[in-house]
Image (cartoon, rainbow, N blue to C red):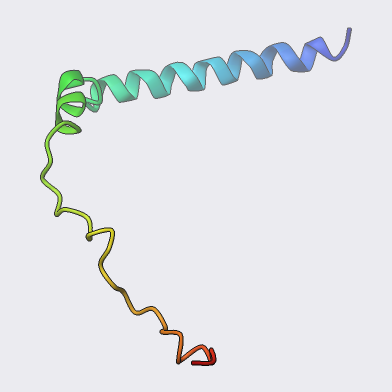
Length: 68
């Protein structure tokens, strides 16, 4: 039972820290544009990936020491 004397204040303190972090995030504007992030992922602004068949700096059979 004496353990509860430590655990209850610790859990209340952790709850208050979580509440303070949530209130800070509200004041910092973290929830201003909820739909913006969901829509931004649909836009293709990045450069296209390299072609799948493009040769990179891969060694050839001769450089690996394979017999002809």
